[in-house]
Image: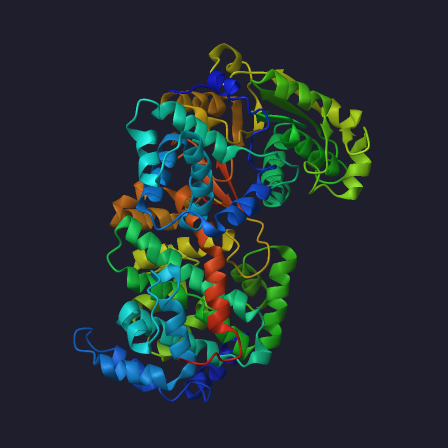
Amino acid sequence: MTLLDEIRPRIRALDAMPSVPAIVQPLADLLREDPDQVNLDKVVQLVSYDSTLAAQCLRMANSPLFGRRNTETVRGAVLALGIKRVEAIVLGCCLNRIVPPDKWALDALTFWRHCLGCALVSSKMARVIGYPDPEKAYLAGLLHDLGVLVNTVTCTEQYRCAIEQGRWQRVPLHVSERQLLGFTHCQSGAILARQWKFSSDVEAVIEFHHDVVKSDTARPLVALVHLSDLLCRLRDLGYGYYEAIGVDLAGDDAWSVLLESCPALAEMDLARLTMDIDGAMDEITAVVDAVFRPQAPSAR
Amino acid sequence: MQAESERASCQQPTRKGCACTGTGRLETAAKTVLADTPDLQDPSYLKIRDVVYQISGIYHPAEKLYLLASRCARRMTAIKAGTPAEYLDHLTVRGNREAELRLLLNEITIGETYMFRSPQQLEALRSVILPQILQAKAALGFKRLHLWSAGCSTGEEPYTLAMFLLELKETLLCGWTFDILATDLNDNSLAAARLGIYGEYALRSTSDLLRKKYFKPHDQNRLQASEELKSLLRFDRVNLNDDSKMTFLKGMDLIFCCNVLIYFDLASKRKVMQHFYANLLPGGYLFLGHAESLYQVDDRFHLVHFPGAIGYWKPPVGCVAGVKR
């Protein structure tokens, strides 16, 4: 029996997470409706019930990364962010709570900095190259490493060893996972994504963001997140250790895949995008520190 | 527009903000100066940012706009421009626009340099780039490396590279020999570089161990590079626009050219890049200043990302690019 088979029941058990707040399910159901039909007052009401969620929405709405609007109310924040972004925040909040504080194998804030960075870079790159759904790119970027959380919860000690090996050998995390666990966070993340009935394109991103050409679904989105993930890991928004890699992004398979559907990629100023990421680093850190630190901030 | 020969007349011989050396102190100073000054919401700053990027290739992300605004503030005071919009006029439509842009670029890149400014770039060299290059060269039976600091100013960059290589002599570079060509157009800068005398600011990131190993006391406040360090360096006066000289600088593994091309017009930049490309061996890398970009200047180099650093790679003939480890 492989370790992946061994942890399958534990992944199934993640369905009954006591730590996920009661309001999340109704909120998620509400947000799944057609954006034109969503009852905004109900969304505001549900978000307001959860102090952490409310604080996250306010912090993000007031960050320059999201346009900075000087919003002081939950309603203003929800309006400023938009329904899609609120959905992403709800999901991020849920995911953060599936890992008990003492189980984190990677530093929690480092992990969320990577995920938020990848979400922002994915949506920014999507806008620059004319990818049709930047909000989907944001969500997929935020969730792409779901499997890291799965591994953290279901095989904590082995996972700590895999991370340590990655750090020691200076190799990408999925490489040390494959060496030590026999599977990667892509595989374990895909199991949970299917179980939680994520959309097929987000599921494809979770499963194939380290092997874009193997994906049958949503390849441009998978490629976009793959490139954003690499960029983040190479600009100090990675897993908190040095990966000894050099990456020619324009020579990567994912670049060719994305180029087929977004020809504007060929004109993208990659050096400038990189400098934009560097420039946004402090704010990303500040937002993640404010939003994902273990102690819950109070809502206004 | 401007050529390197004109840069020499700027009388800013120690101006650089390059990969191994840089201008960190100025960022702090600019933040302080700007605590109660320019209104960064003024859209003229974004337009000035775009003009600077278009002409020089130096980019200021939104979060670093305060730095650009501080440089503009100095120039605005000097020429008595009342608003950023008025200063934008000076840079774009008035008769003095080329001269003013040059003076602004001087402000942007001014500052004393220091050694070991970019540890990420050196780490990328040690962990990824040199192993690749050594493997490829060793397979051909070569065991010598050639580096070039083009526009070396007062020498902080080539001396950093020399120390970096010497530190690897017993490990990664065991059995290898190496040399560093250090060139600049400015005779005064070259003279200072040859002397190799540096104060505390230039050595601020140089460890005590390296200071003891590679420098000797010069006077109460300054140290001088040892003969061992100097023996690795060959200083020369080179105008990057001089085709006849550039043609003979072939066989380089690594070229460093930081904040020099920003003074060149597009045609000159392209010509220099052609020379750099021809001068690099296949598999070699070019490094620019950390805020510089080659966008729309040259598309033969491959932009390669390393953790915290960017290099421009000349791929070997027939090589399929991609993730390299």
